Image (cartoon, rainbow, N blue to C red; front, side, top):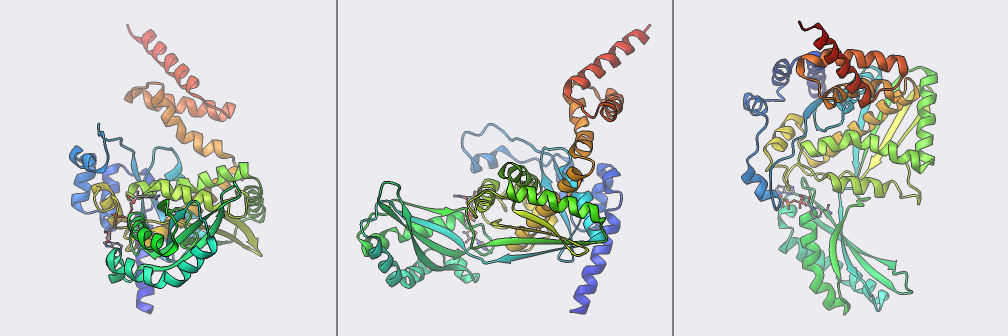
Length: 442
Ligand code: NAD
């Protein structure tokens, strides 16, 4: 055990050294550092240098009416140490400043504390609806009587692969849901452990398979079968603890957290900020980000009001942050092992299981949230965000390569002077620069 701890400490130190000054390096130097960490292989580097090309034939297999690919920039967040293990976090995202904020905040957390994660429950949920239940009590009795047998045949005939891996269908239950017209529907829940897959297709097949036996045993008509993305039976938690922070800063973060707990208008934006950290990892690893988004937002309304999925509070001199949400992912299944970039990103992450990937996402989401709250309660979001956004404005105005440094510098001056900046500023600065150049020409 001691040697395991030693080796992960050494690994963490090695990563921390190799991440020093990472954002200032050029791309080739970043490749070298990531190879030194064992995060990229020489083939990965060749693939990335070539622009991570994916054949259109593969796209034809994924979706319909294919025209081409839509590319997003792929980067890595640095400085993350989660449960004592260092990570290189791949993120595919178009929004400026997300990766910078995640990396900077992860470094701050590493200097002052730690990130711990866990998973609570393993089961995903499939739903079988009987829209017009004529006798709900009878359905309840039938489910009670037959559940063990249905679980057994579903495992034998549909989910045997999961059973072999230690998962599979575990149990069944039934809920009564008001129709709103005086009647009720019966909703049968099927719970299954999908092991290292997200499990959507598997559980859908299980539910479809159980349709006939359920109809036979209940005498009712099954109207539809589909998984639920509100997976409150498989929750991922992340916890950040930090010491040695300024008391005033801790109070500000606590107040910002209360705001997001109590006010749905703020909660929506708070949770968007959390998902800024999560979605890019889901995209990079070929996971279904719509499923996670749906689950997270539904879970955020569990108390009857939409609230933040994160909480920050002071416990004496410790700042404690917590996130809890359903983040149901796969390291197999879907396109995770079919898309070459997703495969490479999963290797880079070195997350050996769906659970570990989910815990990493929860940790990055929580740290991203902390970065946003720290900025919002101190310098404001504009300073960090807009400085980076200047790059986009410069390009948006149509600046050519040699004009970019001048326009960026001028826009930074305007920002610090007026505390605001827009595309029209960039267009104006570029116009002035070009007019000046034209005057200088003989
Ligand atoms: P999948 O259909 O590709 O099935 C996973 C396969 O991996 C199974 O055949 C399983 O036997 C195999 N497998 C190999 N090793 C495994 C391991 N260690 N653990 C578990 N399985 C292993 O994928 P899925 O996870 O069933 O479904 C995911 C896909 O379903 C995603 O593409 C998602 O977009 C889509 N989907 C989502 C929804 C939704 O969220 N509402 C609905 C329908 C479909």
